[in-house]
Image 1: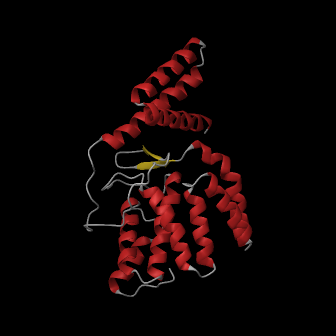
Image 2 (image 1 turned 30 degrees about the horizontal axis):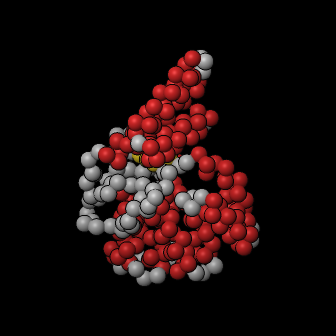
Image 3 (image 1 turned 60 degrees about the vertical axis):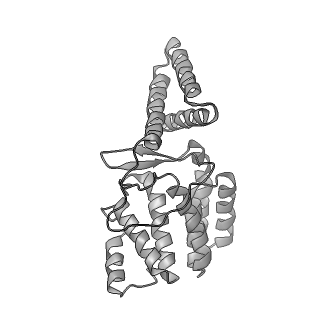
Length: 250
């Protein structure tokens, strides 16, 4: 766990250096740090550094490589424009066709606030929960879990229109990381994918509740394509929508 955190922080540093000064500057920074660690026999740090550089190169490759094919069955599916400047969120390759979100290390500093907000939600203290989640978003506007929880509060108090605003913002954040036409998988089994998968599910529910059945169907299709093992029971909802017998309160 500790190595993964250090690797992620270093990879974020290379990414920011590369965006600000160019790939050559990022490479020089890596080599400078590597020489420093090696000269002081800091093997553990050097190992983390090499892993971070490998991760940085994977990010570059995923952005510069060939575009992937569209999802099957649907010619189009919900997509938002890229968010500029891009959030420091990346995808890490986990298998042949599997990827996992890599969230910035700075989000770890906000986990206690997130857990406290969730505790307030469970006891029905929604105003206290809102304040904590909004505080998180002020510090870290791409914290999808906090946006999802704000949406859940609005859903629970019977305001799907407000819930949609938060889910849409979370969706745009996660979607901005995916290459156009992304047709690989983001399995639920990789834990860092769960916030975005929950976002897609939540936004689809809101769309269905508000009568936007076509949009909801596309989102459910996208969710099933991202997680074919269907941990959120999407297939049943898709089948009901096709039969015209769906429940708007799913």
